[in-house]
Amino acid sequence: MKRLVAYITTGFPDKYFTVDLALALRDAGVDTLEMGIPFSDPVADGPIIEQANLRSLQNGFKLDDLFEISREIGPMIDTLWMGYFNPFYHKGMATFIEKAQAADVHGFIIPDLPYEEAQPWKPLIEEAGLSLIDFIAPTDTPERIAMIAKDARKFLYLVAYAGITGSGQAEDLTPIIEQIRTHTETPVYVGFGVNEQTAREKVKGVDGVIVGSAFVKVLMDDVLSPTHKIAKVVEMARTIKERINE
Image (cartoon, rainbow, N blue to C red; front, side):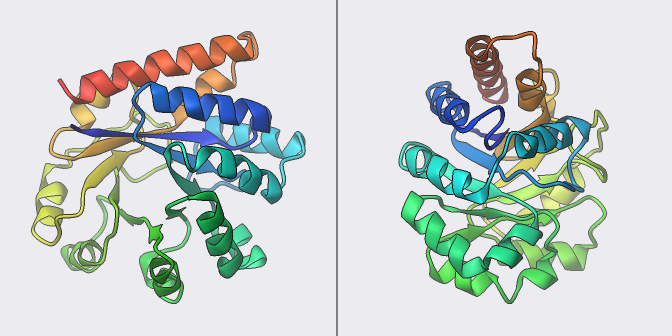
C-alpha cells in the first residue's frame, strides 16, 4: 500500500478548524499529517502556501497554538512538524523535541536546513526517538545522494523538480530513484506538484506522495464554508489515495 502524506497550514483559518481537518484527513486514508508551522518567509513554498502562512500569522497564530493543536492530533494520526529553521533555532531545538514528545509528534521537516548543517541537531532528534526528514533533489550529485540516503530515517523526501511547491513542472525521476534504492531501504516519497491529476504518474517507482498546495488551495477559497472546505479536501485525499494504489 503506497502512502499519502498531507500538508496543512497549522492554525488556518483557526486552530479548531485544523483539528477537525486533521481528523477528517485521517479518516480519508491519509497516513501522515505534515503540520506546517506558519512563517513569514516560506522560501520553499509557492504562492498558495505562502498566502496561507501569512493569513494564519495575521489571524494571530503562535507557536503555543501548534503545541496545543498537536496534543489533540498527535495521538490520532502519525504527525510531523514542517517548519523553517528560524523558529526551531530561536525557540530551541530541545524545546521542540520536548513538545513533540509530549504531543506524540514523530519528527520534523525543515526544508531550509541542508543535510550538512543538520548534523549537529540530528543526533539529538534521533536520540529522542524522533526523525528529521532528509531531502533529495534532482540536482544532487551521486555522491551526495549516497551520503544523504544512507542516514535517512522514516522516509526520504524526493523533490520532484528544482523549484517551489505547487508548480506543475515535471522531471523523469527514474534515474535518481534507482540511485537512492542502491543506498537505502528507507521509503521514498515524492513531493512538489502532486495533485489528483499527477498523483498516479508521480508515485511510479516510489513508496508514497506528499500533497500540500492542492489541499491548501481549497482551504484558501473563501467562497466555501468550513464544512465544505473539509468535505472537498477529504474527497481529494480519497481520490489521490486511490490513484496512487491503482
